[in-house]
Length: 476
Image 1: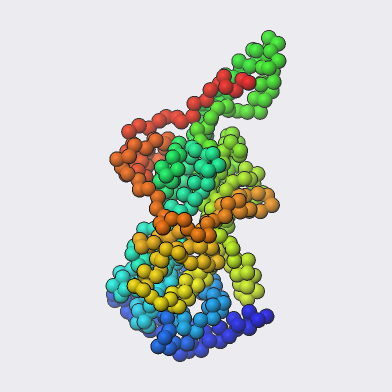
Image 2: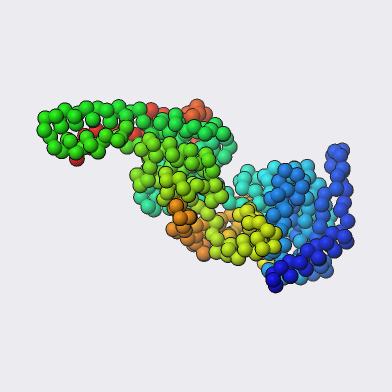
């Protein structure tokens, strides 16, 4: 009840501040003028640290914007810092709305910007914030919008892919297959995987692309696993064993019984599959891989953080699969508080807004040496709901990511994220066009085009098949 009373006070202050802060109307480039939502929490003084939070409070993404605003208010309640003033500005879920919002934030003397949510909105405000010298802590997961003074709390694909692949390599997995959507996300994931493979002295055996919206993965999985070749080898082996069994060979009879239920034999060419999709798409693909002999423990399924909110624990083919996730050290308390006050379970996205306020609180209390950006990129980073995080001068970040294993009884953390970063930076090796890479098999996209997009050049050769089943090896 004490927490609810405190939040009630915050809402009262919020209503009063809304009344005392008049929205401004700005006309941008001759476009139709409209009023952006401006509200403020905190009592402004000459000592105040003023923070502008840009969120989609109306429009297509308003559900997330409102949830993130709620989470930020919980953070304000928890830190109880009277010198921290949060000013909220509605981006209306559009780049043009973000441009109006940032102009209002600048006019009201914001010293730090938290948000916006989408990469298009971050791009829309970048010129203004750089010109004004105001650092931005965005929530986007796109690395393309990041640059000095434009940072993000979002979980970037390079870090996710490297964390999960590095763990897999530590467990003996050396050959990776990638099943990716044929879009920018797929190419970004492929680039990250190539860089992580180079770092870990592993190889990418096959990269398969599928059109977004695909629900039937039978054809592409057959190609990835060399099913036709392995099926032919299985039939040849069964024929050989039948002849041996007919002549009274007891060992051949046992081998034939083992092979009766198998359509293919031999190495599929990889021992881990990275698949950055969730929900029904993940379930559909995983079940097909199992059908074509690519299943645990021979093959390990690897995911990204998207699995956390979109995985079926009842799907047998996904048991023992693993994915990276933000550390949940303090999340249980946040979830219960949010639910008790707002009547719904919070999205994991909302925790970013909470942590952004925690960061703003810390910055407001520091005796600065250098610029605000110097303090944002301090080596030690800071702790929030999602564990440890730190920022780098190029706008990227590093989180303490857990490795989570899927089981029918629920997800289990099997390798906790580091609480103290051991190195002063996180950077994967760049893809060097002059480097000789192991040429992966490309499926679902023109191989030369895919290689140029991923490696920056067409590789020297394109193997027709990676797997080389050895028939005699299956006669034990």
